[in-house]
Length: 213
Image 1: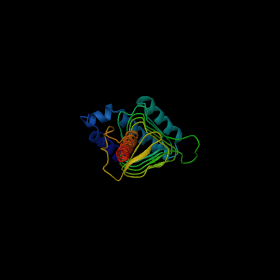
Image 2 (image 1 turned 30 degrees about the vertical axis):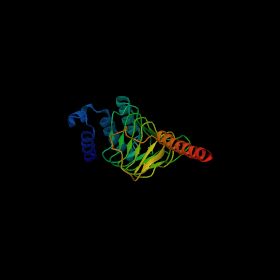
Image 3 (image 1 turned 180 degrees about the vertical axis):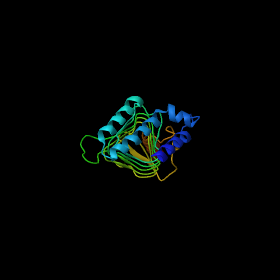
Image 4 (image 1 turned 90 degrees about the vertical axis):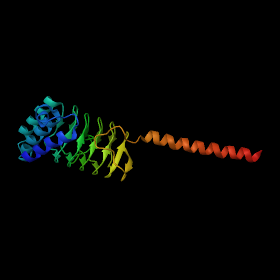
């Protein structure tokens, strides 16, 4: 656990450009406090001391505004930026080097039992306000845009946007981990396609008029 916590501190320091020291991370970052408390609670949860585990997690939730169920399985170097309103459900599985922004929900849909929360691979960014619901899987090296709602699996090396979320880029150049702005807009892309078709039809209509004269 100590090695994991040290890795978490290094991760926050390296991935937040506003951070000036590791002491800031340890004493002032609610995201780190939530992760630290989760790792303690998870230890008790694995040893079947469920009441203590939940007591620790609920205390952390009240202090940070971030709710992580102690039963979740979280890998190394989870980076929670800002963090207010984040919810991570009991059967969630998260790989290494994952970034979560404020308002993210990794939750259930209410219709599943057993494994009912998402599984995230490694090197994933989930943008602010995004919701990933149900036992869906998100592959490695994937970005989910702010405000997206993921209800089905997302393959690795992808960018997903929209409600419901759909893949708009895969196996291409990745969007930078900390950049939630320069993500393709599927609505804009479809409008561009429609405009191209309209221009093409207009050109054909003009040619037909010229031929009939």
